[in-house]
Every structure is written in structure tokens, then in C-alpha cells.
Image 1 (cartoon, rainbow, N blue to C red):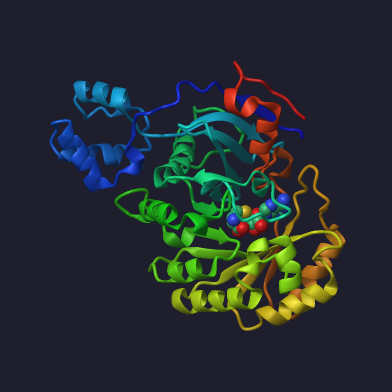
Image 2: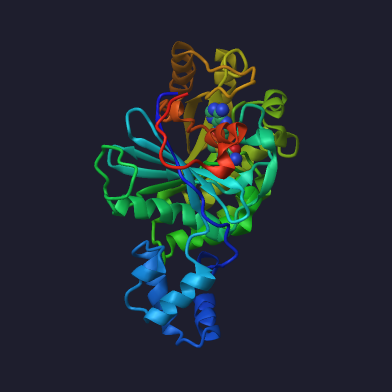
Length: 385
Ligand code: SAH
């Protein structure tokens, strides 16, 4: 790996009240508990969601005593960044965060073209067991709370808004997050309620206020939850990790396929499109000799006929101790062309970010394996591995 890594020292693990776990009414109740007028809640809310402030001392329209009290008993962000990696071409920034209970999660900021896309996590670990995925290897530790999900976004919103914050990636920092993808660690539909509380907060014009169409949720295919999502009335983009067009192969790669077959999954996708009018993305990580044959491309083209969709072919990001290897560029192009010839819009995802372990769960795994993930190190170390 050829990237700069900065390690930070975590301070205390916090037992303070996290304001990101509260909606506006609950924040009002909290103010009343503190014998403060309810309108203070609105002031704090604006600081958090409109100005991305995490430090009570900067909330200058609050009385000094209240600021001091809040600093003692509450916290805005439950996340502590403990390691950051910037890619060689300095357009991808990956951060490992420590949560109050010592668990760690990753999020990635991608600075491409005019977009500022954030890839966030929904769980610590994952229970889905996909055989090629780094996160799956440790199993599921726990769900993230809604506040921990929202906090990842606010952290990077703050970073983009303040050019003086490290690390300096040498690229211009336009001031706001333009897109969010739930494609980090975890299966978002396996943590449905917290993910949806977070999505409401992120899309609410009174809170973070990003348009639902700029947010994409990626799922391995929990069919009942896809239907539930279609009924939420928000135009969140849906990405489905397909990876194989038939049950025999898909069950080997993504074991959840035993519970929901390819046909059931595609039927749910059709229902989602019918309800939301949104084009669905199918993700397909190409693995040499496993799921990349022209016959499978044809089978997939056949299965996807008539679905308003787009296919995103992902070159596999190989993980340590895994037999799976990426398909060559040539074979990838051939696979893509078969789909395109059959009328299925298909793109090949760029390999950006790979050298900084931007693949799912990979930085966390590397850090935990070396023992640095929890403790951090003094100062800033620039290294490559
Ligand atoms: N659980 C969700 C979202 C997290 S993973 C899901 O399954 O969609 C985001 C995407 O990265 C998924 O398509 C996942 O299958 C893919 N992925 C996981 N490990 C990968 C690897 N080693 N190389 C390439 N893609 C990978």
C-alpha cells in the first residue's frame, strides 16, 4: 500500500449523553431536564445539523454556563477518528472511528469530479457471511445507533466545510457532501430501524437536508425489508449486491440467498421500481473463474430483462487469505459488453481507493490485526505497507 496513514490517540471512552440520538422534541425534553427553555433545543440543532459544530464551546448563542454543563454531561459526536488514510492520488480519504464502547467502524470520503461522495457503515461487522468480503469475516458485533450513522456524515461535512482541518489532501475541498452511499461495513437492511431513523435525519430539510435521490442504500437482498423500504415514501436509491445470476452460485457467494432466492429478490426489485420509479443498481463483483464467464453474463442479461436497472461491475478487491481473485480487465470488458449488447446499461467501477484499503472492512481488519486499531499511536506516522 502506498498511502499516508495518520494515527490519532483516542481520549476517554464516553458515557455522556449523545445528542445525535435525540430528535428535536427529545432534545427539547433534555433542555427542560436541565431547566433550560425548550428553544435552546432549536439553537443546538442548528449548530449541529446546519453548521456541523461538534464542540459546545463554539455554540456562541448559548449561555456560557449551559455550554460548560453540556460539555460535561453530553456529546455531539459519539465518534473518535483514530486513523486516517489518504490515497496516493489524494482523492480518497478513509477514516477509522472508535465508538464509545471501543468498537471501530470505517467511512470513506471520495472526492471525484464535482461529487463529494461519502460511503458510510451501518453495523459493526456484518452477519451476512459473503465469502469474498472482509467485513463478513469477523461476523456481526452490533448494530450502529442512528446517531452513530448520522455522526459519520457530520464528521465529513465538518471536514469539507473547514479547509484548515487535517489531513490536507491537496485537492480543492468543495464545501459539502453531495452524495451518500450506505456501502460501508454492515448490511443496512439488517439494522432497519436505526438506518431509517438516520436516513430521515439526513434527508429532513430541518436537519441535514440532503435530497433522498442523492442517497443510495446497498443491500445483499433482504427481500421483506426491500418491500418495507419501498413503502417509506422516500426516493432513496437502491443498490442490490447480486454477484451471481442463479441460486446455485449465488448461495455459495452470498449465503443469505438460501433464504431469498434470486427470483424472489428480482421480484422485490421490480416492486421497488414500480413504487419509487427509481432505477435500481445491481452490483456484481467479478471474481476470476468464479462468476465471470460469458454464459453467466448471458444468464444475467436474460434475468434482468425488463427491470429498470443499471449494472455496476466491481473489480474484486482481494482480501488476505482468500482464494478469490479479480477478473482481468479484458474479461471484465467482455462481461460488460454482453450485458450492454442485451440492452442492460453497464458500467465498470473504477479501482479508485483500493490501495488505501477502501474495500469493505479492510482498513479495520488491517488495523485490528496489527493491534493499532484500538490504541492508536502518538503523533502522526506516515507510512506505507
Ligand atoms: N451489505 C451491503 C453493503 C455493504 S458492502 C451489501 O451487501 O450490499 C458494499 C458492496 O461491496 C457490496 O456490493 C459488496 O458485495 C461489495 N464487496 C464486499 N467485499 C468486496 C470485495 N472484496 N471486493 C469487491 N466488492 C466487495
